[in-house]
Amino acid sequence: MSLLTRETIRSFRRAPLLSALSVTTIAFSLFTIGLFGLVAVNMQEALRGISTRVELEAFLLRGTPPETITLAAQDIAAFPEVEAVVYVDEDQALQRAQQELVEFKDAYRDLEVNPLPPSLQVTLKESYRDAVHATAVAERIAGFSFVDDVRFGRDWVEKLDRLRNLAGFVGLVIGLAFAGVAVVIIGVTIRMTVLQRAQEIAIMRLVGATDAFIRGPFLLDGALKGLLGGLLAVLLSRAAFELFRRNSTTALHTLVFFEPRHLLLGVLFGVAIGLGGSLISVGRHLRNV
Image (cartoon, rainbow, N blue to C red; front, side, top):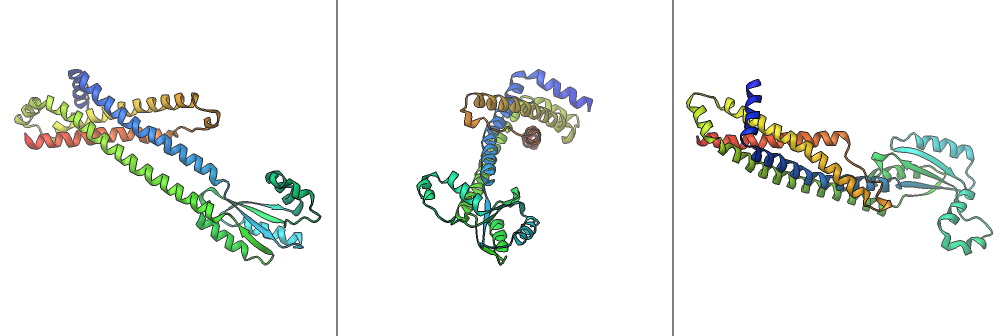
């Protein structure tokens, strides 16, 4: 292992400019992916915030005994998809309507009888805030005899589902495209390193060195360049994130950065790209020697 390490260090010393080019190429390729990843992460975060508004409103028949409503609320709260159940009586419903629908303030003054029924507000757990689970929960709640109607804005929830699926698909496609471009560019730079040492490789083959022995230093070299490139990409991504956040409006101060596990995956991806580019480039050259 020490021999491989010495060979790798010697490779950096022999061609510092080419080594720096390889590291910089990996860094900026991963940085480009990272910028798009930041957009995707924050888009998902925004959609997650919007999804908190996915609630079911179960309107109850007037005159339903309070103990019946309490037992039903406990049963509904036990559903695996349900996070919380809140009872809203007629007076609370009218008060909420007056606060949220101020355009009808003149109509409220003319009311002699409260027209709004009591209801149960049902909040779903984060992983169940989609049209399929909301519909299933609504159908179960509608089965209670004292429930008059259940609403949750089906069309709005279905549009939110489509937007989430589209964001995930576009993120995957563009991320893979950038990754493919990065692999090609990095492969070219490592190929230049291999060609620079072509005579040395030919001599090693003549003295009986195996392909595995010849590949070793190049693979370690590629992995090290990938590691350095990945770390540099993390620093560039953080700098770009902080710069954008400081110059953004107040509404955008809720932007989020990558979690530590995402950063670790990014660095490991850089190592994998370096290894892959080295393996492909050295393999092609060895077949022609």
